[in-house]
Length: 637
Image (tube, rainbow, N blue to C red):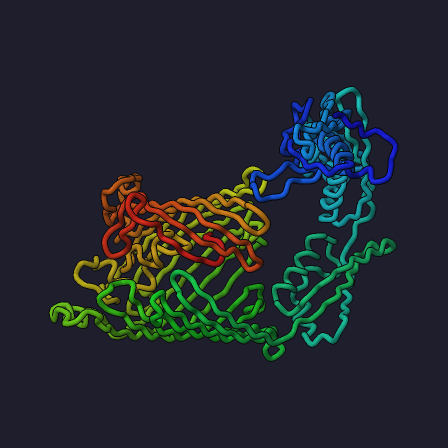
């Protein structure tokens, strides 16, 4: 049965006389435009592959809108003469229908020439680079609107408020685009006026120092946005609205800023659980404007228990920070801290107890929205002791441990880190990249009980795949080298490399856990740590329905005593019953459901290893044992 839609309107014409569901959607005459682009613009949907999902109802008003949407997609791809119509065929099951869209594409129009009129103060070559419309590309009428905005934004970075119009000339399949620009006068910044729905207790000087606009300077649109970002970064304001007030008579751009101040005090508390920390509880109190000088102050405390419900760590911090240090735009922070910890991972025969007060100084310089440099000077004063878990330990082992392990030590270090952040969203990234490189020195001119050099670098990249899938990859590597007098800082027997033992455990490389090499418990890949590390992750994130999704991943990594112990043969993948050698890279793979929430995804990672791992960590592998299951909050990287 064929239904023609070019008929006069009648009552209830938007629905068939008997409700039918869409069984199939077909396209006739489609050659140049991908089918997925057409389906993305349509209201009529194909039935889901999931059997429990309801089939979409056939609606004639949707079909009318879909023909218009299909023509719109073709026009965006340069087919200005495209037409579309629809046809419905009832199937053997009268409750189901097949929908066919008949398309006549026509000839594709291309941009032949791009011309400018009235352009004087801006080089035409630079304007051409900013346009979406390019010579030889399919002509998209919608791009003209975006191009006028881009031209206007470019001029606003040079102090002008232009009036931009467009015109097109079409000859056959060739289109000429003309942009007519009325530049107007050169504007400069004028006065900034402040207002607020309530009283502002923040000192005017704290607001003025964040301004990136000065009276008399040439007007630049980006300066206003940068000012807003700086004011938000102080954490003193809930909302900031800026309204430009152009004064054409005097060629001045004045600004009206409406500020809503945040409450000065805040309090936070949380309870959590994970694969490594069976239970953790935290609390924090803060003040956003201490002494009315813009000092951000916070007090934090966190207690955690391990997977066997034993005490793991208790950490307390008091920090004071300012976005301005030494009257420059250096963000600085001073943090005093104290922590207690019980390490049961490095060796199952004993517990390493540590008590450590410390103080950390940090300054940060943001060169742009994506690039920042952080310098950290940390000082920690550690006391430690050992409690044996095995009955009647070997007296020689006891004497060796207590003879070599110092009851206390001091570490003074300096770290310099450069970060480049280009991700679109830190919690649910769909595209972009991030890079980081850091260098660290301890001891030497800084004094202290340990002396070493340490370098680390990492990079991650995210690619959108298909429509909503994301392919994510990460690579990290690092190495450390001790120098000076060798001292053993942590409890270990003679099997531990003396070079490794001369660096405090907290400053060595360790892997394992939900954010490094999954399937291993936290820090159990080389429990005593090492001085060289390589890690790689590859992950495919697939959305399913609403906030639910699934991820497929491959992780690889290992820790070595030093960089000279890394060999190319260590990276050769292998599957089978042969156990992993200590120097070989661990490869694991897995999958898991994912629930995306505002504070980050909830993950359940199910991981297999293609071969057995060394005794003392795990004894599972894909051929004869169940997988490892781990729970996590937040993205893996």
